[in-house]
View 1 (cartoon, rainbow, N blue to C red):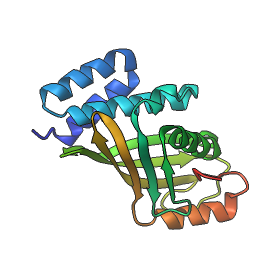
View 2 (view 1 turned 120 degrees about the horizontal axis):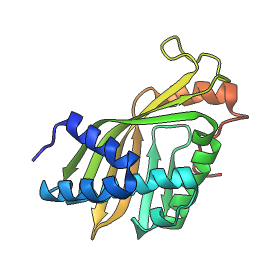
View 3 (view 1 turned 180 degrees about the horizontal axis):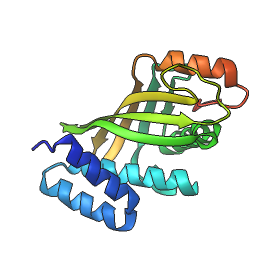
Length: 190
C-alpha cells in the first residue's frame, strides 16, 4: 500500500518533533501498512537528527551492518566510506564543516518508497547564513541542494546508503567553495 506523500511527510515531521512518542507510533503505523524497512529507516533518521543535535553518534552506528558502505555521488566531495565507525566519522566531519556553520532545514519532497530490500526518498536541504553573499538570484543568502537517498537493507541493517545528488548541486557547491572554501567544507573525508 502506498501512503500519499502529504500524509507521510506530516507523520514523519510529527515523529521527528516528538521522538520519544512519535517514533514508536510511526513505527507501528508503518508495520501495520507492511512497510517494515521504512519503519527501520525512519528510526534511523530520527536517531541521526538526534545525533546531529547532541553529537552522540553511538545510536547511529547500530543501524549499519559491519561491512556497510556509504557513498556520496555527483558532488565535489564524492566519497565511499566503509564500516559503521568510518561512516559516522564522515557524517560528523561533514556536519561540523558545513551544516553546523549554517542554518539548516531539511525537507523530504518525495517518498519514502519501499521496494524489495531498499528505501528511497528525495530530500532538499536549505542552508542559510547572513554571511553568504547571494550565490544566485533565485536563492539569495541560501544554498539549496538535493539528493536521492537510498538505503539497502539486509537482516534489518543498512548494508549500503547512497546520497545521489541531483543535477546542479555540483555547480552550487563549486560556487560556494570558490567563495567560502576557507569557512565551509562539506567533505566526508580529509
